[in-house]
Amino acid sequence: MIKTKVGNKKFILLSALFSIIVLYSIMSVNYVIDPFFQYRIKDNKYLLNPQFLNEGIIKNYDYNTAIIGSSMMQNITLSALSQEEGIKPIKLTLGGLNLKELKVLYVNLNKQKVKTVIINIDLSLFNKDIDKEENRFPEYLFGSTWLDNLHYLLAYETTVRYTPVDLGLAYYLGNNPPEKVPDKIKSRICIDDIGNFRDRANHNDTQRLLLDYKISFGVSYMDPNGMDERMDDNLKNLFSTLDIDNNPNINYIFILPPYSGLYWYHTRINNYYTNFIRFIHRFLHETEKYKNARIVCFYDIDEIANLDNYIDITHFNLAISDTISNNILNHKYEMNRYNISQRLDRLNTLTNQFAEKYKHQLPIVRK
View 1 (cartoon, rainbow, N blue to C red):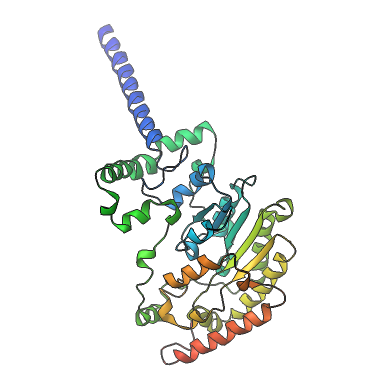
View 2 (spheres, one colour; view 1 turned 120 degrees about the vertical axis):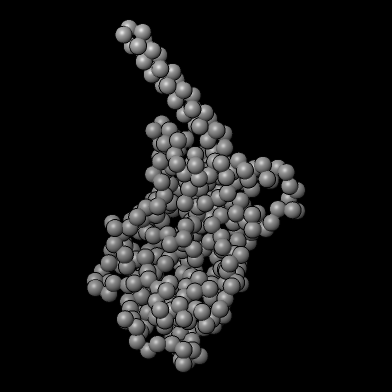
C-alpha cells in the first residue's frame, strides 16, 4: 500500500516535471521564432498576417508615419512615401477593419515618434453600432503583462498555426537563392507588403461583377433608421479617440478611397446617397477644426465610371492603388471648404455617366 502511494506520488511528480519541460520547450521555441514580432522584427523571413502582426510592428519597427486602414489600403505601396525625405512608413491594415479595431491600432501607436498618421475612411463603417463590433486583434498581443507574454508564448495561433509554418519557411528560404523564390511568397513575407492582395487585384470581369451585384454578393447592408445620428455619433467618437488637440506635432491625413460608380449608384437607389454626402460635409467640418489635419479625396477620379478598373463594388485595381500610393501627400487631391462642392458635384456627374454607360445591365430598384 505504501509502495503504491510512493509510486503514485513519483508518477505525479514525473508527469508534472515532464509537462513543465514540454511547456518550457514550446515557450522557448516560440520565443526564438517570435512569429508575431512581439520581441523583435524579422522582415522577409516569416509568413505575415496583419491580424497578428500589427501590434508587433507598432512595438518594434522603426517608423514615424503610420497608415491605418481596411483592404482599401492593403495594396498601396510604401516606396513612394519612403522616397520622401525623413519619412519611414508602416502599413497597419486589416480587411474589413472596423472602427473599434481602427481605434485599437491608433491608441497603441507610439505618439512620441510618429509624425504622420494616415487613416482610410470607409463611410459604411460609421453606420455601424461600434459597441457590437468585434475586435479581431487578440488582446494578449496588445498587452504588456507577464500573463500576456505567457499567453502569447503558449497560444494556439503561435504554437500551432504559425511557428511550425515559419520554421518550414525559414528552411525553404535558407535552401533556395532569392531569385528562385516565387514573387507570391516574397510578397507574403515582406513587412511593406503585409496584407496585400496585388496578385489577385487585376482579375477584373465586369460581367461577373455585375452578376454578383445583382445577387447582392459583396454588398453590405446599410440600416437607414437613425443613420445620420449614428454616423455623427461615430464621427465624434473617432475624433475623441484621435485627440488631435493634444497631439499638435502629428499630421493627420484622412483618405477617402475611390469606390466604383456602381457603389455610388447602389447608394442612390437604396436611398442613402444623400446621407453619405451630408456625412462627408460633416467630416470635413470636423477635420477643418485642426490645423494639422486634412482630407485627401479620390472619390471623383475618372476611373470610377469604368467597371473595368474594379475587382468588386469597392475594390479597385493596381493602377488605382498606385495612384493613391503616389498622391497621398499631393495637395492636388486635397478636399477643403473651397472645393468640396465642386468635388462632390463631379462625383455626382461621374455616377451619372456610370449609370448611363451600364443602364441596360443595372437594376432600377434594390431591396
